[in-house]
Image (cartoon, rainbow, N blue to C red; front, side, top):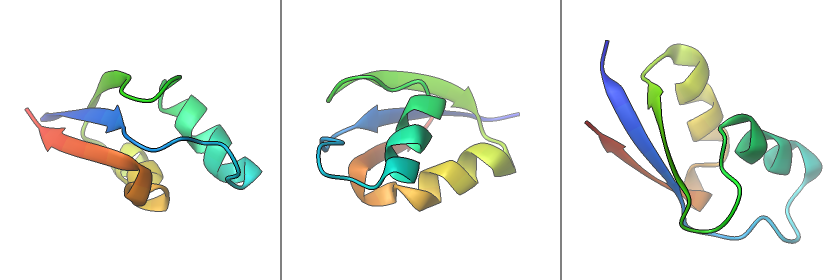
Length: 59
């Protein structure tokens, strides 16, 4: 299965609670933090929900 690298590029300040929880569920904590996940439909759904806050790169 492919892996993807996710980077948080925008702050969660002033965002809706469900968007903040999605950022936490992905394992991101601060701006410019980076995590790697398997490319699954569940992860893609979370990315789509907050795509304007992230940079996504396939590895």
